[in-house]
Structure formats: C-alpha cells, structure tokens
Image (tube, rainbow, N blue to C red; front, side):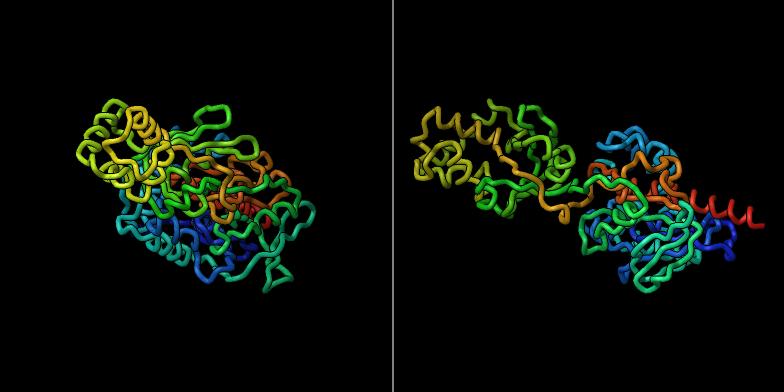
Length: 431
C-alpha cells in the first residue's frame, strides 16, 4: 500500500466526531484525519461497515466506472446538489483511493466495480486499517443527541457518556432507515430534527414490489433471466424499461430489474403495472413460428406440458391459463386464435403492483435531511454551525450499479475535508 501523507494531528483541539462507521462515516473520518484532524468515530455495532458486508450480494459494488455526466444521470433525485462533491471525488478518485489502500479492483458489466477478490470484507478491512493507521479513535457507543451552544454544535451525548463528548465539528453519517439490523435505524433523522432540520419522510428506494396477483405466489422462487421489463403508470406511460433478471416471490416481485425500477416509482402519486416480455429475442413472427414448431412436435401432449421448450415449468400453467386455454387441451387441438392469445401473453405478461415492500427491506432509502438546508460544497448544515451530514442520511439516492456507494464516498470525503479545515481555522485562531 502506498503511504498517504497527512498533516500532523492537532491533538489539543476537541476532535471531529463522526457519527456512524458505515461507508460515508469511515470515509469522512479518513478524509478529516488525513488533513490532520483528531477524529473520534462513534459506532454502536461491534464491527464497522456492517451494511457494506451485504452490498453487491457480499461482493461490494464499490462504484461505477464512469464519468461525471453518467454519475449525475444515475441520480433521480437532487442530483444537482451532489454535483460539487462528485466533481471533487468521483468514481476515478474512489477507485484510486481503494487501489492505494491495496485493494485490487475490476470492472464488470454495466461498469460496475468490484474487488478482484469478490469479497466485501476486503473493502471494509482496507478502510478499518486506514482508520487505525491514521489514529482515528473508534468508540463503540450510540449517539443520543447533539450538544448546542449559541447556535453551534459543540459535542454529542451518547449512551455511555450522557455528559457528552466535546467536538470541534460533528459529522452525522448514520445511514437511512433500510436494513435496520445493520445499524441504519433512522437515528440521524432525529439528530437533524433536534437542531431544526427538515427531514423528508423516508421511503424505500431500490426495494422489492408487492402485488395482489396470486400468480406471483404460484411461481415463488422462479428467476427469469434475459427478459425485458417495462413499468407503466396509470396513464400507460413507460417510466422504466430494461432487460435483465427478476424474481417471483410470495409477496410479488424482486431481483435486479425490479429494484432498479422501484427508484422510478412514486406510489403516493401513481399506480403501476409491470409488463414482462418473456421472449425479447423473438419478434412476434419468429415466436409464432417457434410455437407452431413446438406444438407440432408435441401434438399429442396437453398444454400443461407442450410448452416445456419455451417456458420454465412452474410458469407454464400460469401462462396457459392467462391465455384462456385449459391445461388439458391437446396441442393439436389448439385453435389459431388461442395460439395468438398465448403469444400475446408471452410477449406481454402483466403483473399489477400494489406498492413497495417496507422501507426496512430497501437497499437504500429515499428521503432524509432536506438538501436545501445543507451546503453542497462542504455538506455543512445551514441551520447550525459545527454540523455536517454525509451519505444516506441525506435526501439523495441513485440507481443500482455502485452509484449509491459513490455518493457515500463523495459526501463523506467532502464532509471530512471541510470539518478538518474548520478545526484548523479554530486551531489557528486559538494560537
């Protein structure tokens, strides 16, 4: 690992206190410490980076190997707020950061970046050992409140230290409200509201979808690959379309396509239906030819078995019934209009959506601290001095593909850097 130079610590100053040792919190602590700040990182979990362990199915999708324009395009809400942070610490900077810490990276489909080892633990270990190298003090504790004097945050109270920990600056990086078992329990929202910040009601983004359609339960566990999924709103407008993989569950739909689509859906304002093209590689003419061939080859089989070359077994009864055909109908008895109905069902399999799964099951949270009350260049509060926010606690979120972690790295880096600069100014004033 290349040794990164950093400014000697100002040990006589109150520390920069970072609340939360997730992606944004650890990056903020490292950024501040590299600029010479004394840093205390407060985390209630026994281990740092709990949520990082489950990102990218345990592989950790570190970032997306793309330019600023593509990063901005992947942020459906408040992207303009992140322009400055992503300009200063974009995906190139994030990749260089981890490679400098000795983590070899690779780029996969969709420009997704992973550790060569395919182990999220390597990313977490790299961050942890850099924290230790920089002398960041890690305290296992939960912050319960902010201490404010003359409209300035001067410390935090914790469960173990209710009298407070003095701070020259506080960075709140507690995550959102998704996956609460990892420590994202919404604490940061309460801390923000305590000092007058508005919090946009958190809701799930990148979240599975619920459906009242019994077909989902009937096909529970079935994964479809290389299908095209379109999501239409109640006016019939396509709000999302992509090819990929989805999963039927007992409650509705999940899988990569579904999670990505959910970021484009606002259930408070609209209603949605999912349309699945089960055979996107075949236009209607080619699919009809294929149907005729398969049905001819299996002329004496009933329709419950005659489509085994085209559809997964658990899906055949659902599709056949949707087409208005009895499962006992022999393939050679199928009428032309029935074959047409079957084709249309396969090219446009619909699933009505009733809403998202609970926010606790979301990969990331939409909602959080209102970004209009935060300085986009420093992540500092506009309401009170001595306070910054970083990561998912802010009302920002992005699509899948490493973009949400990139937001965490960028906002954490900028917040830590700015906090260290403020501590340096106070140190100079004291001298």
